[in-house]
Length: 282
Ligand code: AMP
Ligand code: MN
Ligand code: MN
Ligand code: MN
Image (cartoon, rainbow, N blue to C red):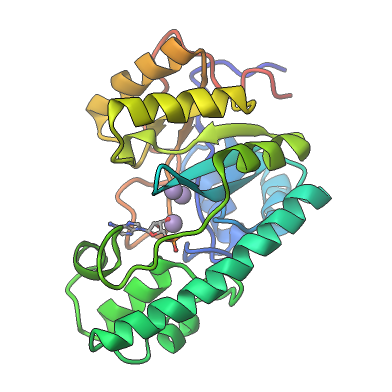
């Protein structure tokens, strides 16, 4: 079976195994209700939710591919590489992500210290209380805690002032290299996808280096229609996909019913003339 472009594919979202708030089973149900026909769960640097997601999707007759969103450092900034249709038990991928989560833990403790130095006490312990999975603490958990303390009006406010890239409470990532992330995904039989390219603050030369290095490493797709792109960026990244010969992906990046503007399955379809990343999946 080959799936054509109009398929309602949602190939990017987060469960409470990373920084989403719904369980994998709750997400599967929501995706199904929202009309999603092909779904992936892509938790940050974590595979532990995929068994539950696959089981819940099967019960709903919802087609599912295992996924992950890997944190990468490139040109002194953080880039996210999604792996789709991976084997979540593959030893190369499993061990690499174990190491990334180890670094995440060190960084979370450092962020707690930094924030304490800025007058916000107890953020590490607070963030931990907001994390269902203590192995995966993200800035999102810190931000939720800091808003609920009454210190900030919104998560956006926390990121804008303290936790965003370059802000005083953030500890810059020492994440995977771009080449390694693609290598791990390919070792696990998956397809590597550049997540939400429109979010990166790169120069034109840096963008070209990102796409070229990714392609040379064996990466084959980019997200074109994502909850992180403005509608005018769909055409822009459709152009990039055509220029570099990438397949196109689509995903809401849904995290929470209260926090996410774009629901599962709610985005428009891919622009015409692109090859969907799922074109050859059966
Ligand atoms: P981390 O992987 O710990 O660096 O956290 C990154 C996560 O923070 C992203 O996956 C988003 O879910 C969230 N995030 C990043 N920037 C913002 C923002 N401006 N507002 C809300 N959430 C954000
Ligand atoms: Mn996130
Ligand atoms: Mn991301
Ligand atoms: Mn994401």
